[in-house]
Image (cartoon, rainbow, N blue to C red; front, top):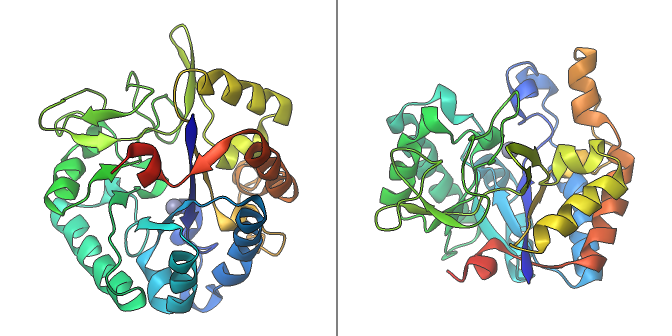
Amino acid sequence: MIHALSVDLEDWFHGDLLRGLVPQHERVPQVREAVRPLIDLFERAGVRATFFTVGEVARDHPDLLRELAAAGHEIACHTMTHPNLWRLTPDDLRDELEQYHEAIERAVPGVDVLGFRAPMFSIDRRTAWALGVLRDGGFRYDSSVVPAWTPAYGVRGAPLDVYHASLRDPGRVDAEEGLLELPLTACAFGPLRVPTAGGVYLRLYPFPLFRALLRRAARTRPLVLYVHPWETYAGTPRYPLAPWYKFGLYTNARHALGRLERLLQEFSFAPVRDVLGV
Ligand SMILES: [Zn+2]
């Protein structure tokens, strides 16, 4: 079985908590340095991934995007400015996508962008309209649905494996009209769903537990892992936030790369497009 490896390529200030807090003059870009250890790790492991890229990163670091494309990584869309979709209208999203395509086309002319991931996994029943905007915009797949309840996001009861998501309800299957959806990994224990998709879960769960959950999920379906450059990089600024938020953003960042490396040794990973065969 081949599993999907993805990086949400954004800077440390793009995340939902920091986006509204960090003033413009404090937004010192760091994404080039922060993503380097991941690029090197993937090269050492002989693995390629999907980089869901924020358009601002492509605009400001076109050579980084060209390097990723030349190395065989997939370039996909993570909007232009990283707003979560709950705040947007359909026209706002279309505008974000248009700006994104302009930025990416300038950085990597001719690149074929097939996939989308919403900032903060913000495709759920409130933002079902987004799937239609993506389909009409030419996207072949979405990978934003977390099929579990969490305090911040998630689609209760959504399928755990690849499905065609209904344009009216991303938690339901519509094999004819729906958009191809690769949900982030979650494990089911009866009615309980445990999100297990990398990032914050890779850092906060005890690693043996995290790995055991992945092994369990991988018996029946492709894993879908994500990671952010800022959560695997020692130099990420520690912004003054409430203790709970700091805990979520920065805990175990120093262990994240090593844990990821062990997973790359155990499972076979590829870009999303290869897992879906699109
Ligand atoms: Zn993001």
